Image (cartoon, rainbow, N blue to C red; front, side, top):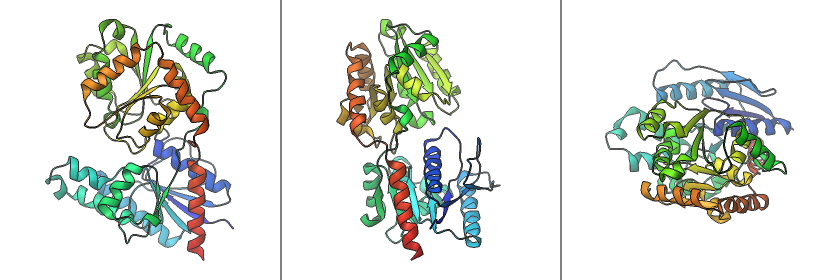
Length: 378
């Protein structure tokens, strides 16, 4: 018999990785006969058929206060209409299941912020909301995506092992390079005016600061003149580019960088490029790394990304260790773009992606949610 599932997501926008994961899991639960109620503060784009959408816009100005208002509203709604399982995609009290797409806030607050920051109301609330999910006594079950983050949560909160459920990655099937990949690549590069000898570097992801776009721009500027003259950087993602447009001009590479905005044709971008760069400052997972593997695109990334180890396992690129060294990243980009066998790294990645389980996250998440909802009903 189908269950009533409450899905809690602070805000939905179509090009966010967390948002896409939530919708995929929600639709899969619905397809299994469950009633899905989505509680959110805003929904950009078309509403999905099937799940019931509840929207309440907070009135507060500060993000942490809006989050508190959102949590209070969700609690009131669920008191009036209880659910068999409450699934959260943001940290807050009262969850039965939490999808752990975000990193450990307490770890960042203690390692990257001053003691003054930890006196602020923002810190106190976010830390309390995180503890309500991960503390030993919380009882919330965690859908964990990253072993790196698991160790941090256990370190700071003592999260019991029996409440942690690891999920495989979730690569969309349309990212897999098909038999027409060479034709798609040629058509894309012709459309973009790229010659065979040109090198196209790609960076994909919303949140340019977190994803390390400044690092990519500095590495592009550091290329030898002849190589830089035939290299372009395409940036796809939902963020304000103004600061980075100015930085590119300051570095003298304004004509070498194109900001594409959020794109629905990421598979074409992956097939048309020669190299993906993802020098993130911090990244819980980094699904785009696996999308690049599936498309046969070599990668340079940083080891803070939860999925960076797949690049090393596949021998499909280069992983920059911590502490990050800009000069090392510059050299790695220069050497990679100068290699005559760069495409071979991509071929190894594609072969790895055909054999590894990079696609089963949604099914695994639904099975865990179903099991917990059934247990709560008995």
